[in-house]
Image (tube, rainbow, N blue to C red; front, side, top):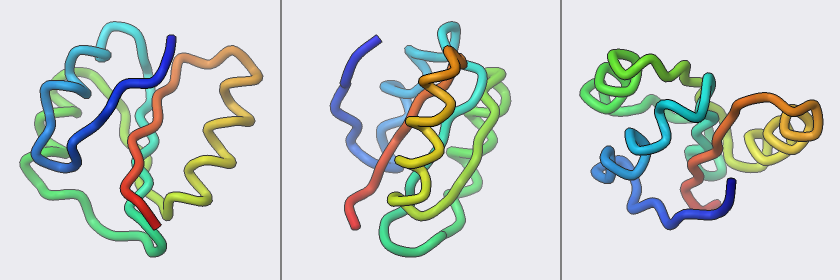
Length: 80
């Protein structure tokens, strides 16, 4: 539906406001894959959001492919 600024791992509310609109959230963790903070993962999963964590460039590529298929997805990125 558009672009919204995300403040990083501490900005859970921005992601939760989208929970009714998405099935899967792709999280780009920068240049390398990193674990999400446990609290963030738990909060998102309890809201019914599936989470896929990967490096940001990979997350961008997968997001674009699935978006072109009309999937209900979102992308949260940390810079490379």
